Image (cartoon, rainbow, N blue to C red; front, side, top):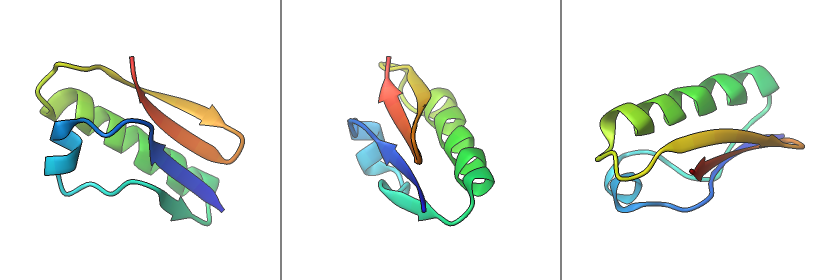
Length: 65
């Protein structure tokens, strides 16, 4: 099981329709979705924060940088 976790949920994330702690059976599906989430967060949120993706074992962590 592969997870996507948003490390710290900013206000924009909380107001969005995105979910935290999402699980996938496939690593490829999890990675693709995580990259889409990071891109959306960096392009559509208020730009107070920049978001990066880190892979830790079977978890994709989205962190503020």
